[in-house]
Length: 398
Ligand SMILES: *[C@@H]1O[C@H](CO)[C@@H](O)[C@H](O)[C@H]1NC(C)=O
Ligand SMILES: *[C@@H]1O[C@H](CO)[C@@H](O)[C@H](O)[C@H]1NC(C)=O
Image 1 (cartoon, rainbow, N blue to C red):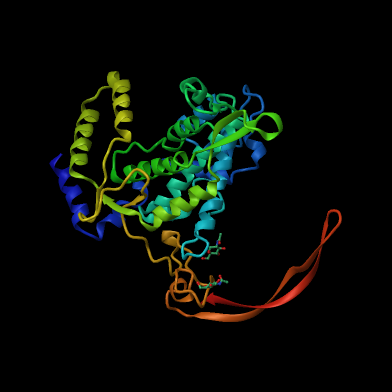
Image 2 (cartoon, rainbow, N blue to C red):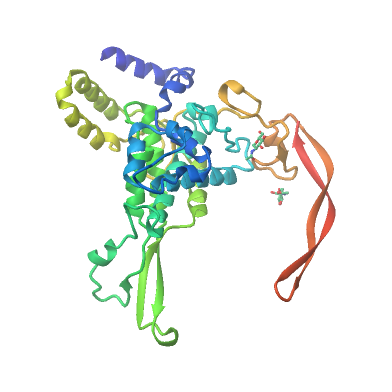
């Protein structure tokens, strides 16, 4: 145990070490399911009869045993997970379209991580990936419930039974998106394999939770009036999920202000006592131990790396090490580099040529772009356009 404590202290004290210790083995084990976004056609995911849930073997291979069980027990849910994973990729690429790291994905191959080797590092980009994928599963499953495409859930009607109408001039009614189910399912499915025993797994768990929190906190009430000619004699309301773009925008803000963290002292004590317990625990108390681990899984406080900073809040993203510069191609780290990327020569932001091209300079070209233009609307209902050739100046990084 003393040796363990010393190693922990070393990792904090020596700046060169964290990159090594967070590599690969410490990624956490919960990220392979992302591959579901690319594996096979959606049809492969539709086990139309619950008795024969035949899945694309490539999909199957991305799932851990517990995730397969969840898919079996909740017919229809895998389709929602796949849709969520794709939504996460699209949102990530939108949010990062003008940055050096642009959230590109690998062609899915068995055993390869969808977002590439960057997730082996505990940096901000990795934090965003975990949060946005967890949020997307929460969102997609909650919506699929209310659309009736998952057998084990439906619209959320709990408001109706819980809240007495009292003095309100409206009633709960209609079909609320099932955020409760989406949240719980995301915890079960997405967090599988993240036991929270080391700092990297705690980072993953924190960011997964943050993603879910950003979905549930943007739930909004929608209402509809019923009654004679639009009068509002009866008004019914329900809870609606946010547009996923809102979640993406908020997560991107948290990315910009992400907190660098390290293990806190109180946390070390707890990890130690866990280690003692698992060492002395026999098979007979396995269930008990697991229950305990589950209770502790989200129950930790990460400590800010800079003692002058506030500890991270529930919706903050957390990371462990600075991001690599992403300037030059580095296959070992899974970095594509910014050679050939388009940049904006008048911007002083991250999309500007200075920052995007890392000071290497850029090439300016005139290109002819063919676009639809001078469109006119013809009754009814046709839009006719001309094809225009316009000259554009584009800048690409050397
Ligand atoms: C991301 O950037 C790389 C080059 O660094 C480029 O090849 C790729 O097309 C870009 N991907 C997206 C989704 O913009
Ligand atoms: C380039 O950056 C400037 C200043 O930020 C902005 O006004 C302009 O719209 C950008 N151009 C393109 C093509 O994005």
